[in-house]
Length: 393
Image (tube, rainbow, N blue to C red):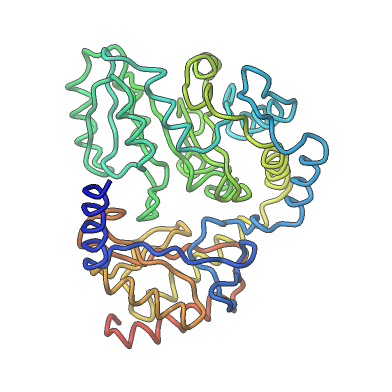
């Protein structure tokens, strides 16, 4: 242990010296547009709380009803004695929402991706993955015996070349994030689906940063790109826009979901999703089907922030998504700006390697429907003040 501890201590010091150490700030309140950090109120611009539902009274009441009527948890996995009627109801409603045959619930989307590929594919198959896919896809692919190919981020010419070169495999599965979490850019799903149809490939989309709030009806990048009927497999989360607690799922054809129930290891060997989360998630889908007010507010807030942050001189990644990366390049600079922003009561986080490529350090701002116009103006003013201090604008 002494040898290992000394090795780890050296690595941690190196991480700190390079400005890459990730501190965890303690929140002393519920998740919302305004939160308590270090005993002061700050505006939160770094949560995945896109629709502002993490502290929704409607969802809290639904979660409490789940506790009252269905208990704290199942103390079991689904196939033994862990399936309640509300689990089946949520799966049915998610399937309807995404226009899929069936859905299977997981503890997280990380687990959904971890249990997907090895269940469906073997050494006679090939997985073709975007270079910037989420870590959960990367880890899920590593667990699978299928051959692996990778195409440069959103490079459709390279994807087509790989599809041409892999026609001898039994099954070819293209896997991509729907929205890439560090850049906020959308996968070229229409082009991917066209290539998949031409070369007879399967398409999987992880839509965690899109489900519930992106696209005309909030059904995600598949909705935004108008390919809902062309995607074979969708994995996503209940832990971002859909209430922000935890939980994930896979939606697909009946046969794929059936085999996942039989063989997907994270599903077979993890406790059932807690009733409070299930009940709250059912309520989210009801609210989304009822009206699009939150979507409209989020879109307006996003467009306004993108316009204003560009106007004052910052360089951002182009797009329309509420993930807005402010590009700074240097890891220590990103950390310093984030620390000074907190002094201005604006909570943002600097991202650097290995979360993003070297030389592409940034502050990732995330807009919420819970933000008021005044909240956004306060953030813009703080960014202007701190940007002048560090001479980045």
